[in-house]
Image (cartoon, rainbow, N blue to C red):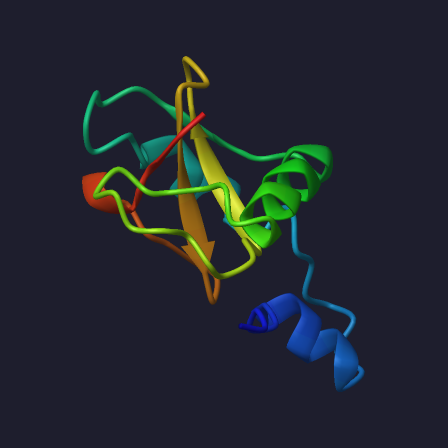
Length: 104
């Protein structure tokens, strides 16, 4: 099953270069967001982390905490302070639901 293009990829395809796959969350918003499970602070995933996770997703080796396979490429992710969980960013919106988290 082909993966859906991220918002950043779709915008770049149409010539909008102002959208970046990494650094999509406003810094002030990021300061108030927290892990829904542990309440630890979050940081944005680096480009190299996203590339590694997307390779695992493409190989079919990633499940979320609900046990469902993750099939869509991550356009971004928020990583918990202890680096044990990440939460996807979809269409520029962080999905901060415990079941959508991925164990790292």
